[in-house]
Picture 1 (cartoon, rainbow over the protein chains, first blue to last red):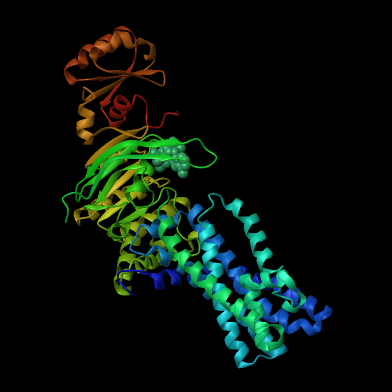
Picture 2 (picture 1 turned 135 degrees about the horizontal axis):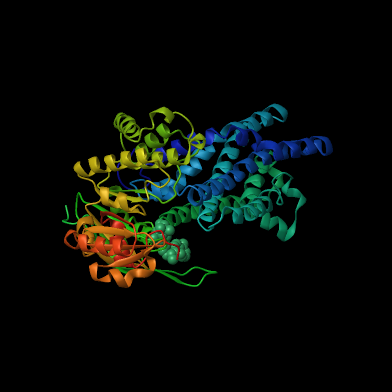
Length: 248
Length: 309
Ligand SMILES: Nc1ncnc2c1ncn2[C@@H]1O[C@H](COP(=O)(O)OP(=O)(O)OP(=O)(O)O)[C@@H](O)[C@H]1O
Ligand SMILES: [Mg+2]
């Protein structure tokens, strides 16, 4: 571990947060409830869409990690005041933000891996799709955790966060084509879907299975959107974590 | 190293948040803490103690004024200050899903200690806070005082050069409070500097080399417990039962304070016999004891530290 500079202490704080989260096995175990119910519906009502829905459920699960980062960081700050313990210390403020993100990802990796296994078993997955899926999921993780941490610093009351969180994560995670094919949308809705991170990621992953679902320009747009959004939001998250380490 | 552990100059803080009228929490606080000193901030609820501590600990921006920690400006170079400090937040709680042992140990790792050193310090801090029996239970199952002891253990284990403790012994039993005092004394002998807030006057007296009394965001006075007590004008407190309305009869013996139906008179040993004679003549019973910080606080602030506003 680096003894000075940016990201100091990030390994240790990630480990701490993973350790904390790992005790919440009930929450880890129930993290797939919505996804599994949706998959059952799809299996019954539109079995030919099962592959799309399975890949979408993986991306949605990664996207939902941001909500956990947000709730955990807000709870630890508002209820436990542990931000004061950790921020007034040699731990870099950006390590505090990244530590929540890495720790929560590590704790919830098992259910996400279970969805990957289910996908491989039920519909199969090429190595190419697997590689695209990992890259797209990584971008979603960076984006959602950055937003989650930034938003966590904006609230002064836990109860005020809940309605906002459920609106945000369902609006962006379920409404756009994540669980259903991008092909169902056309015109400006389709363009918008290619810009919204979860559906952009889903479109790219769908493209890796059926290249015909996206025109080359659309693929470029979605990939560029994801890349720009993840770099920009991560940079913002780092800057924000440093600035918000001191309240004004 | 700079010759002062902490120097605050004219620190002002106005909280200006949406949905609330602006609140002036600090109106020009200046104070100094020398290396190795234990200093207490005393003040009633809302006096501004936590606000000051958070500003000094890089957690809150002042509206104006400056604070230096070991010569480094906390506002301009917080990243250089943070490795030098550790904070027990007011009403903080450990991670509920860590045990006290894990909380202290992982915190030390996050601060950059090597594992063996972190483990040694963890065992030591848990022992100092008498937490061994519950050290391997999740904090969610601990009592309030045990959680608070975990917070203190976490911070004293760092042996940081400057420790901020915001009401560190709140909710602790008398044994635990004394354990905290002992640990903090040991730490300052090893070279750490300590700034704490408290509502317990006995704690301030037992623990601090010096104290500042703060009221309405201003430092009213600073000094040692001894000097503040001396400034009350006497060394004895005579409590006269049922004497609340009789301050006129006793004013000549020293300062008088009505206290729950009784009258407290601060006087000197020389005047005591005469005072007692007056009380006997009026048929009032008296209790005599040494002057405490309570009287010093009353003299300075005009109200008791735990009187409702
Ligand atoms: N976040 C905030 N927003 C607005 N006003 C605040 C905020 N925090 C504190 N205040 C106000 O600033 C003043 C000082 O508060 P502070 O918490 O510093 O007092 P304190 O001396 O620590 O009190 P206590 O003994 O109750 O802990 C109070 O009037 C309080 O209402
Ligand atoms: Mg306070």
